[in-house]
Amino acid sequence: LSSLGWQGAGDERMFVFGNAARDLQGNKHPVRFTPRVAELARSTEAQGTLDRWKQLAALYEGDEYAPAQALILISMGAPLHALTGEAGGVVNLWTTKSGYGKTAILRTALSVWSGVHTPGMSETLMMGKTTDVGSEIKLTQANSLPVGMDEITKRIEGVDRKAKESMRDFIYHSTQGQGKTRSKSSADGLRPT
Image 1 (cartoon, rainbow, N blue to C red):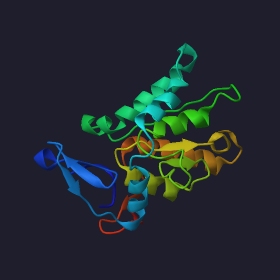
Image 2 (image 1 turned 90 degrees about the horizontal axis):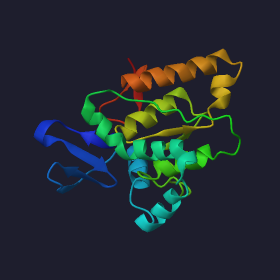
Image 3 (image 1 turned 45 degrees about the vertical axis):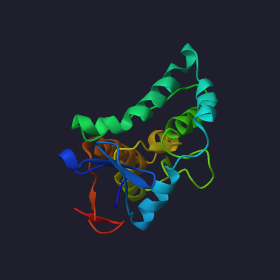
Image 4 (image 1 turned 180 degrees about the vertical axis):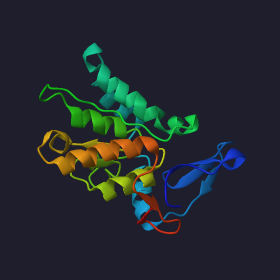
């Protein structure tokens, strides 16, 4: 397979996560991934304990952390979005407050699905300097799982018009479910459309 998340249609529909696929009855099926997607799949295998994750999430209790709570819940429900028929979505966590912990909140939200707190396992977290093609590949591979992008300030507030256009295009294409390129059916790469 060249992506995670929902695969197939109708009664054949399966959800691919970690090292397996689960059908609509909950039966587990082995899968084979392309090399790049295998890295992403490894990052989504269970790590740590649910109790430890709950301790981490408890740091965001209280009304002042409503944006963090919303982002965590959006991450939890992200795969359900694919069932709506909509192509994609973008959520922006922005504040003028320095030290608010936006990166920590993003990592906590993504940790529902991947090991973003484990070195070398943050496959669903991109940095603002990630190239357009790199971003598109990551979104295509994650499919209906959430992907985060951190440190985008320079990309959207800088004087570099090309960087601003790049961010605008990323947001537009993310919500349309396709970018300037399309996945090859038998490889990890992308090809122009």
